[in-house]
Figure 1 (spheres, one colour):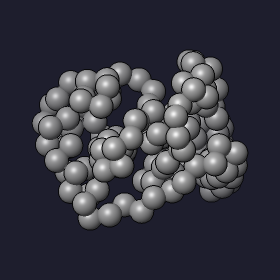
Figure 2 (cartoon, rainbow, N blue to C red):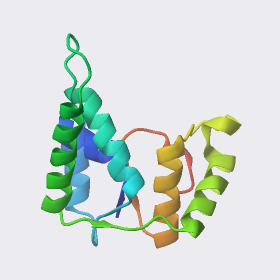
Figure 3 (cartoon, helix red, strand yellow):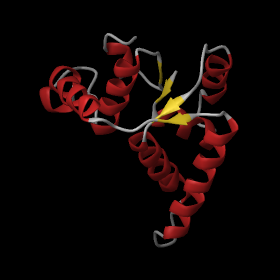
Length: 139
């Protein structure tokens, strides 16, 4: 199962619905897979949550988020794949069909397009939070 960054952030940050996501992952068949794009997006998303609202932004929040994401991915035994030129091409095609730039209701952003492309390239399910991917053919 390919993990979108939204799943990683939701679980680590204990966002509403995180327990249901964990249940879905517990019954998933096969290994968990991510890409460097997912890792990057998850670290930055989590770092935003770690920032103190009354303090200047700091690299410590990014370092803390990176450590948390690394620990989580290690705990679940995930594998990180390389983003190949083929995956990049599928991500562009995805943006042309489901992306923000074309006004599709799925409204997929940069990271979403790459998660979609990775799941498609590997022919595996995609774990995500929210409704965006539900409006694609991966639902």
